[in-house]
Image (cartoon, rainbow over all chains, first blue to last red; front, side):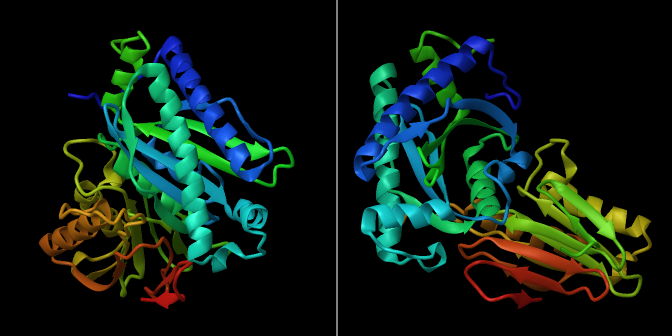
Length: 207
Length: 159
């Protein structure tokens, strides 16, 4: 039985941060190649936060954002969620498709582009974590929503949290040098998966 | 923004009288459940996240503990239970993967929980705007009992 309240000690947190760092580092490299410009990442943060607080983690609840969601199956199930704010969408579409559009008017092509970017980022993230931990993880096809940030974040995290209390997030922000492209990357392992990952790193989760 | 607006976040509730406007922003799979007594003009709104508490304590987070609690709080402010009517908003499914099974999603379960509990309490649902795949913001006006629902994918709706 999984406890409602779980905590991580500093060593475990650092280990997860390192996992996030390696995953996101590779994802950023892949992203840079696609966009042909340098994409940087912030040091990932590992947080256990109450579900009540998730709808504002990227800003205002009503901001329009694109969310690209993956179900992760395999030995360490969970979810991956990308959030691209609308200004970034505008710029991404311009860089890749050489088009000027308002995110509110995105068509199938633009949505496909964002899904495909999500696919590439998520794939390289999971692959590098897999290589490091020898844990096999498979991503689903992308789910897509362009809508209010609060609606996307709350729905995703409530579904992802088995206990309905807290959610563990490994969050990374990425951006280009000019900060025209910014995005949020969330890896949300299930609590059981957390144990699997920590075990694979030689740290068990009894603390 | 209207100065009389009171924001209600996830797992919170609020009861109020005119001129207040009860507001929840960016509802996805959550439900914003509004109760109204048109005689005393007492209004109440709860923003719950899940259908069942299973013994957990965070009252306003769950439909089964939150709705009866909201009714009690409204009675304390002068509402009569027999006058209460309900409107429900939210319960969307924001993402689709094209391989859905028959298991109900959380949004649907949340909406269904409202109907079941309101029936048990003998409270009529006057209107609902639930389901679909988009987020909603709701503004509940205590002077009229009307709710304005705004979303990105659809025109404004008054229920």
